[in-house]
Image 1: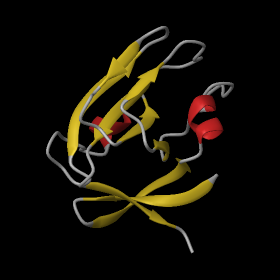
Image 2 (image 1 turned 90 degrees about the vertical axis):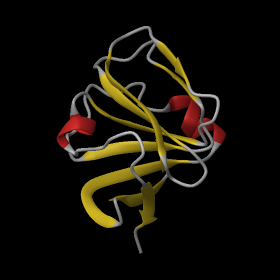
Image 3 (image 1 turned 60 degrees about the vertical axis):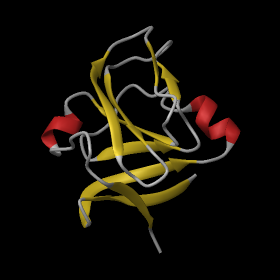
Length: 116
């Protein structure tokens, strides 16, 4: 899995991102983890739907279009839920309440800047 930093509103943020861009990585997602630190996230691409079956903790889900524009934010998503955003190209999974703490809003621009 590749590692990157989240760029929000054009600025390199403090959130370290794991990029799941292979089918097996996207299928696994955050399953099997007991927690996710507040300064960590998972970027799934391509992705327009996520589920939380088998998850051990709640998450925030941010759907992003091809241009990096935030389309929708689902906060504090608990177990056994499904969220879909047909126009999304990517989904960002974060610890519950991390989207609000990072001041991510619908219409914002997000991107992953791969670490070198």
